[in-house]
Length: 282
Length: 268
Image 1 (tube, rainbow over the protein chains, first blue to last red):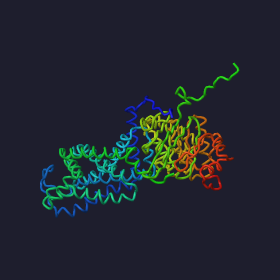
Image 2: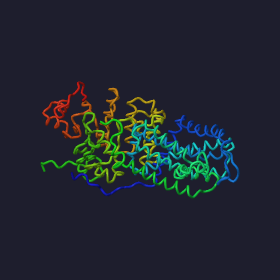
Image 3: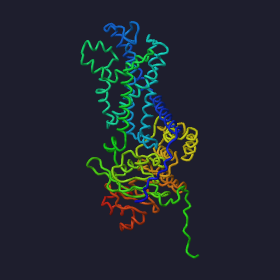
Image 4: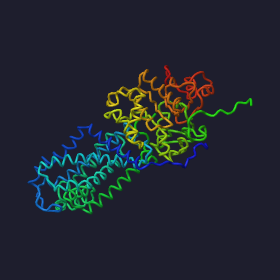
């Protein structure tokens, strides 16, 4: 059929169209989050339980020596606060991936993907939107933690922001990558067991790594190789106005790798296409 | 001069020869899920400002075809063009001209009608002010202007469908795909939606591809594509398809073509 001749007169998209699309996606994700109050509450309760109960019980067991970025002896609560901030983002990243699986089943993902803008850009917007939601949660946590004597220097609240954006993007990309491989909603319990818990416990979120090394050198190497450890350390240093360059490099590289892989997995000619229809076929 | 001069089509189309560029062209498209072949060498066109019914039973491959046209799946074999834009090679230009109503509901239930429309407009890069104006206009046209601020959850099935059609029109596409849009609706809501979409064809010159398995939704003036087990069995104006099948009506024609048992009541 000669009628299908590609006309080489693409109009392309202007910067303002890209911007409209980005703000639209972030706005919608924010609205959805505000409508799901239970999600907000549980996102806050989870780290607070760790802070109020776990940390209170553990502070006598675990002595913390002075390690950077801290300049004095600190309470255990103070030590685990950055780990809990990263935990909020870890859960949020995985929950966004859950919502993508849900969206795919419900068809909302289709609405997103028939947008004429480049698919990689759409997915990037989705990641930014998820990260923005995680920032709301983290700052809400920081406000409550302040009353619990977790008082980083005031400038820390600002310097931690870029670190949180980067770590949020990394964990969101990881979630998106995982979501591309999940067929059904029920498989999310597996994500909890095989991704969230190992990542959280085999990291520097709850105990300093030199402590881990004393106990088990092998676990120490696992923790060192865990990108989540570096997300925690990046946040920990940034909260005190410092930069942990190694963690920054690891988190940066992981973000690029995970995001590229996720966008690749959602490419119509690969990934999803191979797997056939999600849900009913007519 | 006694012989009639060639009559120019009164349609508004920026392209010099509108008849030469189909709204949608499917050319030799095949698709497999592993060993299962869902579409086998499917070819047909949808003309601008026409209503084309894609008729097939469940499992005929209609949804797969829709997923390919909307670029949800990559095209394995063949080509799909929207007003001449190849969906694989210039998806942005092709998708810009396309509006879709998917079979499953794809609205955000907890968001208001307007919020749903604004989100969709943003996905097409339409500025906020323009989007608000178009949303208000479309909501008025589908008779839901007074519900603009309510949650979509509170709408009836037929109202949700009307909203989805309005949403699909927000970026002013020239081709509209609808995948079994009347499934699960009552008689009144079904009739409303069918007449609304037919109006879009006649008044706005939109090309429509309407997938269905309900024969009573088709009119004699429509183009028909009969899809069965992944193959196109017949296509063309409804009268011709019925005639070629040696039948009197669509039901019999469909039955003869596919060898299927047709349920009483006009459905397959």
